[in-house]
Image: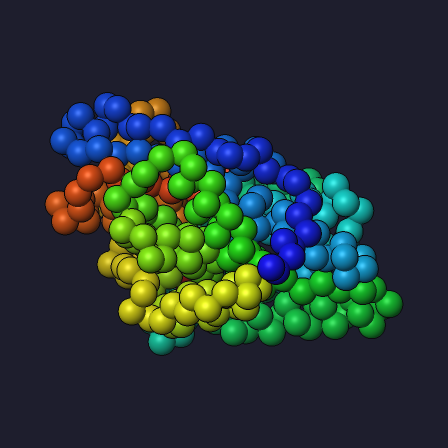
Length: 327
Ligand SMILES: Cc1ncc(COP(=O)(O)O)c(C=O)c1O
């Protein structure tokens, strides 16, 4: 029997699940929501769950500093920054306003930039290294150089991949999948997907059941599917099970990214407006709005009880939104 990974309690769990009564009636469907916007820790969101395991592991490793990366509006950097502050760990983050995949070109449109999550990063003293926009690989290189810079000063660094998407991050969402199974039976679960540990953990938890798990990708890169496979393989090893998931096991949709990662989409704007007007619930523009737009679009092909996984991200609503530089 594998041992549970050590957990540092941070989030308020279980998060609520409730029916979207007005919207269900308006659309003639049975639509529910899982409120991970209400995980509580550091203004809520899906990252609180992952941090419970990642930071327990960081403390176990004897690290005195954590280094990660993301966009300037990263919800993960915000939440890990608060957790590090609380635990007395240094936190460094390499960030860009708009990391992108060169093969898809630099997207243009409205971009949340300063303020929002970035303001909170500064409040809690994250060592925020803002780099000119470039590729995700360049961003990962900046993070590695930051880790080495810290190590050169004698710090013991715990490296955390973008979005907290390691097998431990996926484990947190495997646990979240078990949590929601206790709260009700659903025919379909829809979540936003980016670095992949949310979707992969949920897919693993529901594998072999009749429940369909749909990820709505907030990045255009098809390689995200490989990330899901890799994370599930790592999770499987962690759990010591024989449940392997291949590419065909994942239902990941790329049609709702809009102009690109981090850039607002018209579909997302409309979906946010609908949920707000009908239910008084806010969505963030980078992840949940696009995922909810995807869910609404896919509804005609779905049946039964449908669950939307609200992963939070609301501080981005308070970020300054500017047009991206063209080119
Ligand atoms: C609010 C929010 N929702 C969804 C996601 C996507 O989750 P994951 O990175 O686990 O795919 C993220 C982070 O990337 C996020 O910050």
